[in-house]
Length: 374
Ligand code: 9MR
Image 1: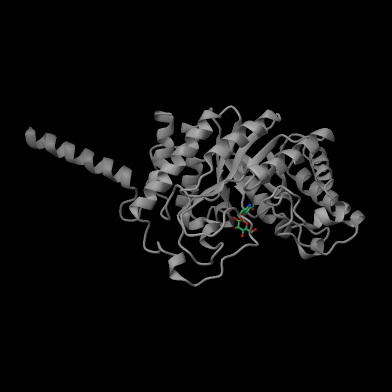
Image 2 (image 1 turned 180 degrees about the vertical axis):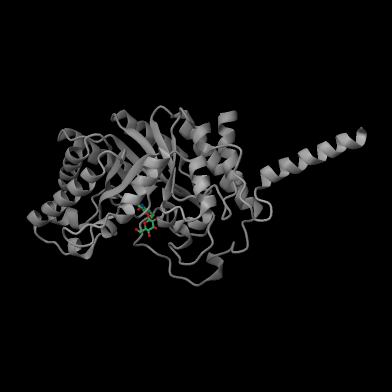
């Protein structure tokens, strides 16, 4: 009897340890908790999908996506360079597959992004005439947004229009059309996508100076009578340096303007960096191994810091849950993150809450805990 009890206890212990530590012999075991279920009623939990994930080529990642997330954003498939490579010639292949994925899985589907200075095809960069640029914007926004009018729930209409000091970024749109290009972009999007939420999306707009610029931009749209529904704070932050007070203040100030707030591209950098943000024109040129210290694994102290920071963030998001529509991670697992390639190529980074084998990290459990003891 004693022996039998011990045997059962042993079996239970093995099962518990397998479920906590993840796959045995490389096999996928899904976590017991699901982020989307735990935060249901608070906000959506999203992820960005790359092409392989849109094609569901990796079964275990696909299962994890469907178990954990109820919102998806196209990481690259809807950017102008991909979808509109030459004037009037569209390539909807990847974007169609992306929205089909969202439809099949019943997920909230985010279009990213209509007007952005980056990943813009060369023919647009070369435009110098206001009329031509307006024609491009009109053709691009109408064609793309109308095509997905029944499948895209929210559009990042304009992405990253501001400099760090809150002034206008000198993109081709600003240089040729002046700051009112943003009014035109939102007006066109409102006509082409009447049912979708319309967002302005940027990084570092929780910081006071850039936030002031974003507020000017939003007020400008509102004064012109065009629709804007939300602000996307991207959320590319760095462990140990999460600007919690600025984030809280931003949530309050943006929502006071009548807007929803989404955290649209969340990841927490753990590797050395000499600047913050996500301006992809900035790179650190280096082959210094000190810049890539965790090739063989993340030290426990860093893992704990990452987890604690994710916990603090989600506690803040929960506190302001009535203003927050969605929290989207920028990638599914650490192996998929753009931060392995930027601002230094070929690093081993750990910014997300699932590891390279799709196992939940300490950060995942800390996030779930915020609901248990908010
Ligand atoms: O994650 C994206 C990466 O795969 C692309 O190479 C990169 C190039 O533009 O864009 C990344 O996503 C960016 C997003 O579209 C806008 N905000 C910053 C993101 C990280 O650079």
